[in-house]
Image 1 (tube, helix red, strand yellow):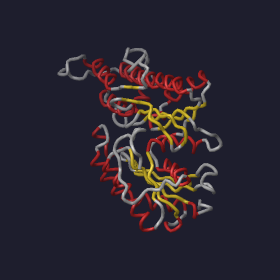
Image 2 (spheres, helix red, strand yellow):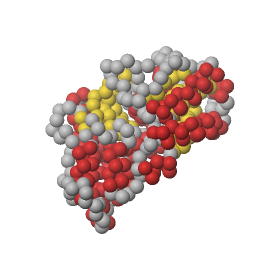
Image 3 (cartoon, helix red, strand yellow):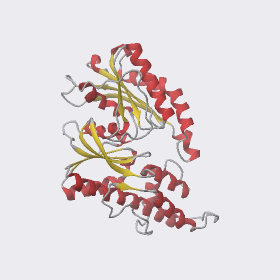
Image 4 (cartoon, one colour):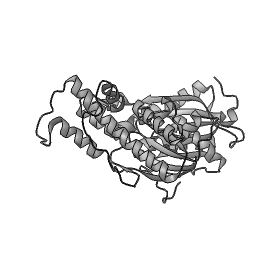
Length: 358
């Protein structure tokens, strides 16, 4: 379907980790008047490239982005029935993520912005995940809210006063929830990516069969840790002796381990979500990131929101995983005059509130 106002169309690029993605997004007129509309979104996954390694290999990811970026951009434009000359801005995620992967997306964005002589807008990938809730609920005001991003690389809480004002409250001090799912899935012999495989295995299991730890329980800080939980699963499999071979699990044992691990992750996240809501006094909760696709997490957060009388915003599954539609957050940035120079750079880590933003 062709866009009805090509002079206000934006091309967004996503290459923070292992998805190469592009989207054409139509902004409201004037830019502050409403919610942007995604008219095409294309994602090329790299799961098959990283599967045998049990996780994302940065160099492989970067090379795949370099191969896929131009065909993906062409496909997004083709589906939107729009030409490059009709674009009015280019948006690209420049943090956080894998440096090599980020550079591929930013280089493509800079070249397009320079050649077309249109603005370049850089955005924070995590803030984009939270803005996906606004895309999913265009008729609702989701800000101010508690923002929770749960993904392969991040488990982070933010106080979001607006799309462009997100203060970091806390999160995991080691493995992110999605990374823990991947590592435990490898221990259990299930494969990669771990999230959906563990969720499937857990359906037949007893979530209380193993007393796995819940990190920072009772601690007033908004902190999480999943490395100890991963070690607890390893010890449940073969004890503390690292030289012991992995046992052969029965289907019931596998299901119980998967269910108990999944419940421990979800319990820890939900407990810290409750704590963050109580500490901030916010009455809206926005959830983003690939692990937001987990059914148990969605159900437990829904129950928490109902109990605390908090509005909960969870985007559809297609907007939970990495995708360039997250670049719709560029429209509030354009409305605020936040345009990037062509000498801007990427940042691998999470940008904290006390650090200067580009």
